[in-house]
Length: 374
Image (cartoon, rainbow, N blue to C red; front, side):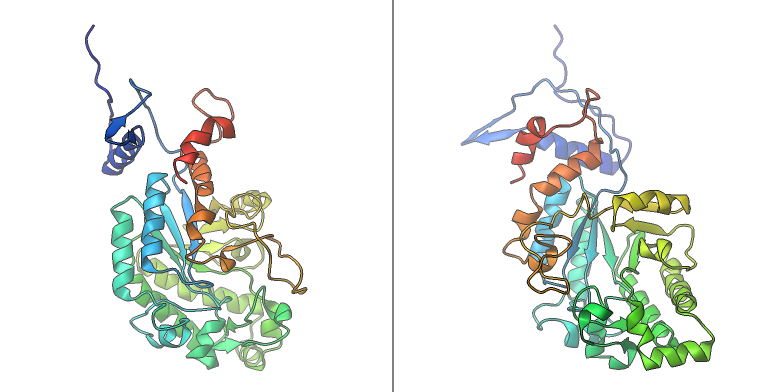
């Protein structure tokens, strides 16, 4: 009988070859000096069920050294995840060096060692690309920007105002004064400077959890709205159109959180991608408005939930994401919180909800594969 090749692959593109080789390498095990596989001969016909298979890493609430980010990218590559959604800055810290505004990181990072230099960003982007992972960088605006006040206090409304529960979803309070022309120019130039180092197709401008009380009680914002003859949503619309124009000019599609579509009357370009996070039930409403979406709802895919809450009006109570979130993780706990649970999600993203036999996947059958990612 003629011997058949161990593996035959039909490759249509380079990344397909890379994914195939990743699968091939995972068919083998080692025991001392012995390398073996127990499944030969094997024939695999494979393709991704979903084009976007992402993982979000928040480096603002807690800083992660570059080595942690690179190691996470390695694990993503092994599990065929292809987008690192990098929530790099937020109200708590600004660890990103920006060529046009170096003062943001100098005053907004936790300390001088907790900054991603421009050279670091370039290295991480290149490293990820070589492993089939795109970097989707997020600079959340106009909310989640209290840290900007460390270098530009004139740009921030309700800066660290208390009680924070009235002015923000988590402390410290502070949002960009979105009706100000100077703030729009600042934000546009910030985006343009950061985008110079990002070759990917997408860039996230955030847009979640905009707090109306913050603007209602900010004299500067109210005066600017009155001078412009605008409502808050009209000002948000102008802010969004002008800052998104920078993203489009750079050849990228904007990415926003679901509130920008469901809670506000703003103009978004047809190529805008919407992240559904509040509830999986909101995906249909976003799709009905004609936007592409990424389903990343807190009721299913928040891998960092479990360990104790800290946000909320009652400091002794638990958060909506009880009992833990990324905000409470750090380099000491990153791997154990992400893996192997992210691998379980990654398998569904790659192959879909059902196995090759058409039946729903089950934990018992997947256990050995997932166990390898511990």
